Image (tube, rainbow, N blue to C red; front, side):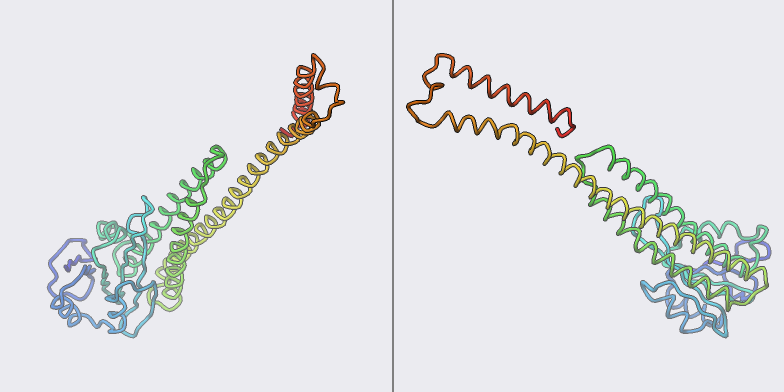
Amino acid sequence: MIRAKRLSTGAELPWTGQTSDVWIDVQSPAPDELAALCRAFAINQLALEDALEYGHWSRAEVYPEHAFITVRSYADPVNDREFTERVSLFVFQDAVISHSVGGTLALGKVWDMVGREMVNTPQEITYEVLDHTADTFFMLADTLEARVDELEETVFRTQRHSSVGEIFDLKHLIGPARRLASDAREAAALLGRHGTGSAADLVRYRDVQDSFMRATSRFEALREHLTSLLDLQLSLQGQRMNEVMRTLTAVSIIFLPLTFLAGVWGMNYQMMPELHWRYGYAFAWASFLGVGSLLAYYFKRRGWW
């Protein structure tokens, strides 16, 4: 599918080969549509191959014919899903071509902005698409931060619940997100250094680079936070294990003298007076309860139990 929009008035029009002051959005083009597009615009073949290659990473290049940048972002950042989408931009002096498989969140938002103030040139459209693409990383970071906060509260409040699996699931999401944001930052930086346009356009490109850099920093901070949370989880588990072992040790110590007394009175000697004493059985139980109670009270006072 190919759709076009004039940059001067913002009015939509069917694409008829106009090659100036126009934004052409291409989504999964048919071979004949792609051939017609290549006849109308001097598209560099290396850039076209990168745009058509499935799963290509984020990169940018300035060719003699035009500037080119392709960036990958998340399709559903609010729900922290792993599905990604990619948009490629061919930036000419007086036209811009965007290519994607089925559109992106950024393309949908910027398409409705064309014709407004500061969204009237190919460079301004490129900036807006990249800036809204960076916003998807911030939305994902907000979602992941909320999940990390909930997980941190769970670690502190639910002592018997192990959150190690959930922590590793979040780290699995944050790692690729950080790499995607970092690759997009490098691509925006190259476009800002070598791209064509006015001084204001280059400032916009640097602003996009800063946005991707801040997104990368947030993902790095989240990863470090999760690492600290994992250490805390393991420390709390070790602490709880120590408390259990301390309780078992206290109970064992309480029964140790009782076992000794039972062993002594269990010996079959004829001259053991307690065995023939009328109150010997009661005395044994009193000794057991007294010694056990005194040890339990002492451990409780010391905080060992």
